[in-house]
Length: 294
Image (cartoon, rainbow, N blue to C red):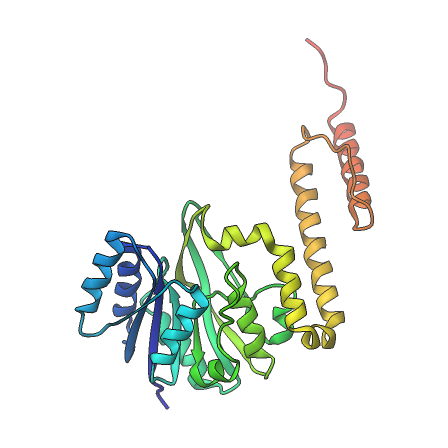
């Protein structure tokens, strides 16, 4: 059965970017039934002008509130919708034209899917494709596995208690996903970059990395039973990620023999990596032979 779909766009002092986000929603091949823009206390003149213009659009409702953070803005927008499914979209990002159609289909086809999203195409200061994997609760314990831009079942958003409005330093979407998935189900990912994700050195995502350990510790404390239940899986996933990064560093150093390797980390495979690098460099030197001086 075809479900009703709403979209919540949140923004704070983002000027024309919010307009671009809303335009990407209105261009969807599967038009949403409702669109709500939540302004989280914007004060700059251009943002206010954009919001006034959007408020005059027949297909868009604009909700204004005092600045309370992105979690509060998302909750406010989701509570105003009457649809079965809902997309949350940050005001500086955009959707490819098929995002709603592709993600809604995943939820309509499988009741075990409680959320759906896609890969991201980064633009702005960085250009790359990010490929989150989605999954069940256990897959979200060692790293966030879904973009913040996601299609949700609204009843599951409500049952999970919504986004934690106290979390204003970052990781609020990761925290919500853990709450959402703790009751079961999974988040599916469309393996195409249907989210246009704007990158900036001052973005909230980049700033949150300065407090990553603190914020991750908060997630562990808030969802301790879930972490304890899957402790072995979490530790093995963390070790796999550490090993993969060490392997990448080793390959990069081998490709650049001019880089000195004078220190080795201990207890994480670092010493073994340095031994392999030294061995490979020596073998390459023997294969090349002595360099003749002119």
